[in-house]
Structures are given as C-alpha cells and as structure tokens.
Length: 306
Image 1: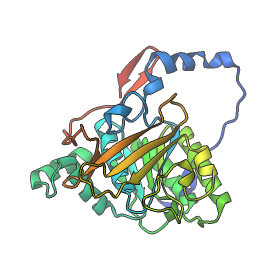
Image 2: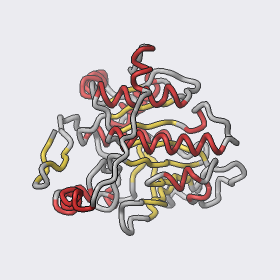
Image 3: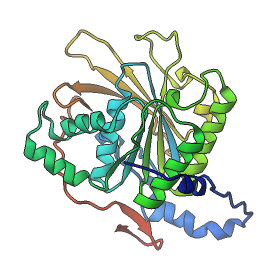
Image 4: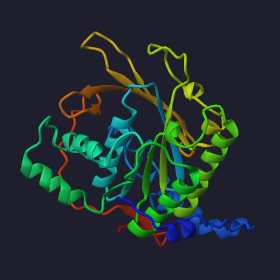
C-alpha cells in the first residue's frame, strides 16, 4: 500500500519544470537511440499478439481507456498490470472504486485461470507480486493535490513506472468543469514525462450513448482536451451479442501518437473462468511467475535488463 506523511506530501507536490532551449544537434544521440536500440517500439506490451510490434505503453506517455459502464475497463486495466509485471515493470493502482483486496482477488483469478485458485497458487502469487504491484488504499475520491503526491512518491520510493487511475470520475473534479479536466490531463502528462512513467487514465463514455453504439474517441465523456492531450486512446466496447460465435467486446486503438499506422480494432472474447479478455485464436496464458527484469535501451548501443 502507498502511505504518505504530511511532510512527504508537501515535498512530492513540488515538481519543478526546467525550461530550456537547446540546439537540435544536442539530441542526436536521442534520435539514434530511437531507431537503433529498440526505443521506437519500447514499453509495456499489451496481452494481445497483433499489438506486440505495433503498439506499446511507452514511458513518459498518457493513455486513456474509455468505455461505458460494465464494459470491463477495470478488468482490462488489471490485465495490463499483470502483463506489465511479467515484463519486469512495477505498477501502481489508484482505484477509488475497488479495494486492494478485491483487485488482488480478481488478479489472482486472472493469473491462475481458475475461478477458485489453490491455496499454494495464491501464496506463490502473493510472494511473486511483492514489489511488483502497489495499491493506493483509499476509496471514494481524491483531489489532484494528493494524486500528484501519491504518484511522485510511488515512482521515487518504489520504482513504480506504470500507474493506473480508475477513474476520472472519482477525482475531485466536477463532470461539467472542463477547465479542471483540462488541467488534470495536462498535469498527468507533465507527471509522466517528469517521472519517466506511463499513466493510464480510465474514463467513461458520454451519457446517452447506447450500449449498442460503436464508440470512438469523440465518445469520451468530458472536456475535448482529454482526447487532444492524451498520447494514446483505447476504446473498450461490449457487443452484447447473444450469438456465441460472435465476440464479446472490441478494443479500438483510436489514437497512437508515436506509432505510425498503429490504429486498429481487435475483437475480444471474455474467458468467464479467469475474467481475461483474449483473441479468438489466443487463449489466456497462465501466469508463470518468473522473475524477469524489464529491458531498456542504454548507451545508444544495446538493450540491457534492469
């Protein structure tokens, strides 16, 4: 759990912006790293093979995950956290809607592929997730002052590099206060860049949207700046089909600012036993719980585990 004293809170809300003007030649090494060391396609892989070399959750970026109530946004976000942990990334869940107990109970089910995991598996899972999964133990709502402090504290003290905020509606921002929503997404984008982390913000679809309507980036409830400022947008929609041959949901990669031509739509199926989303030809995989370090580019020459 993440707990912060009042003194630490003050410290971690002071993130300075160092403004500099530099010549383009000073970024030559950065440019080479982007193409030569794998940085172009670096970041957290999602649990769907077609996206592996097409799109990642890269550090210093913000992603919106949007859908209607009941579409499974929180399920999918939890699945992303497990996939990130498999790759050596450390995640922080800031869920004001679900307790850490409820989240972990669902994630061990996802990991084991069992409705009722064995005692041995649950204990192994608990040991494996130590220092990999972190949870902000508060339900209800949180203001931006505390949210910034929690994220900065977790990144600095626990090495967290993937943050899931579930959801925008639980932040202390009025639904019609578009200026505050604009400030929120700008703050998250600045935090992601300053701390070198990825932030995923769960959002809801506009009221009045039918469950059968195809969603797009314009369906996101709130200020238009949410979609404009985010680096990536994932839309999760349910099909609510009664045909067992048809998919249960779709995942629309509606925006991928730094990935050319990555936009696509995947048909997803929900495995009811494990509560994992998967593709038709890709059954959910049982978590192997191996110790694996994330791989990052260094020295402009190679990839190295850390």
